[in-house]
Image (cartoon, rainbow, N blue to C red; front, top):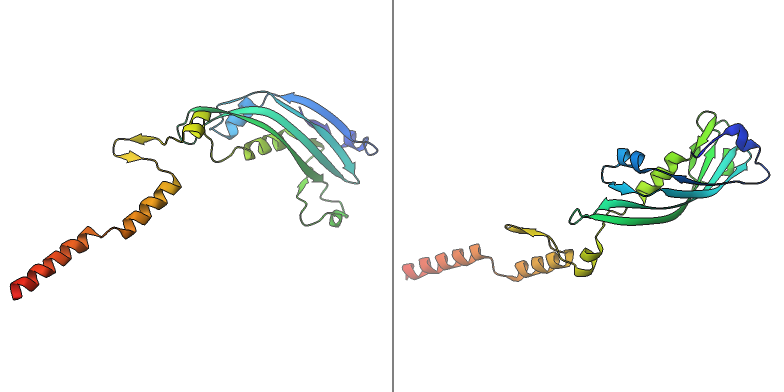
Length: 186
């Protein structure tokens, strides 16, 4: 479990506290996101640096999620290997001004710092919105059913351009009707 008391972290002011753990996150990730079908154990390593009354966490996460394809809903293994940095601060620290506007600060709540929720957050944030099986990427075949089909954006744009240049059949009927009226009047 990635959890340390604030007192134990203060002992590491002179040198970073290094850690490496393997976390079984499948169940907690599935509770938070229904699209997570499976998850391997995640190896989480990094270091915590104490800077006055702030803790800077540098974390490296490696593991694999199984999620559904956004096209066919077939399971897709999604390997993950990423790093993130977060800064945890005591909100009563009078020197919070030393951080820039670009720094995102997280409050240290209670007497302990727990990183597991942050790791889960970043894993879920790294799930892309467009996921395809290797076959779907290679073949670029779109699903279809009875009187419907999925088309690519390029095919849709081409279809729209063709419809704009094609004559409108309603106007053709109207033109024919006007021609018939003109012939009857003569």
